[in-house]
Image 1 (cartoon, rainbow, N blue to C red):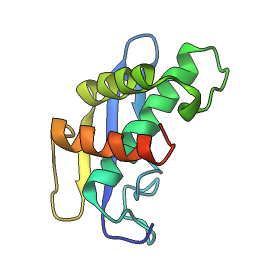
Image 2 (image 1 turned 60 degrees about the vertical axis):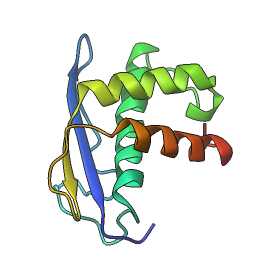
Image 3 (image 1 turned 180 degrees about the horizontal axis):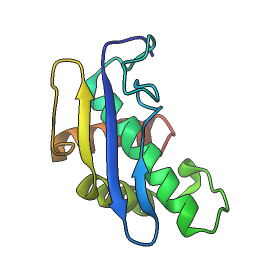
Image 4 (image 1 turned 180 degrees about the vertical axis):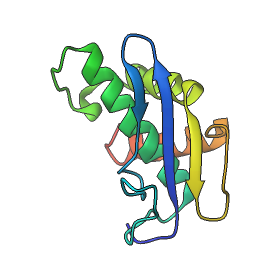
Length: 119
């Protein structure tokens, strides 16, 4: 993962509070681009979404961990869509601010994760 892109997804989730992807997706805890940042903005945003989604589902399951890839496809997609619709973005690279992941980028990236066995 050596590139020039990073993303931070942050949002408030009822009964879970403020969740952030800070420290993941090519950005360090100081909101700076990591040396080993993501190769594309889309991959950075998908990694940020998964980071927040993991924190959200961990909280919802009282701290019991379930591997993301062990969830069924529809559960994964619903969770990522929920997070995507609830977060604000800070991105690093060619684009400095974006509202959320575009629907086509989301579906394309999610399809790639699924085909690689990640989803």
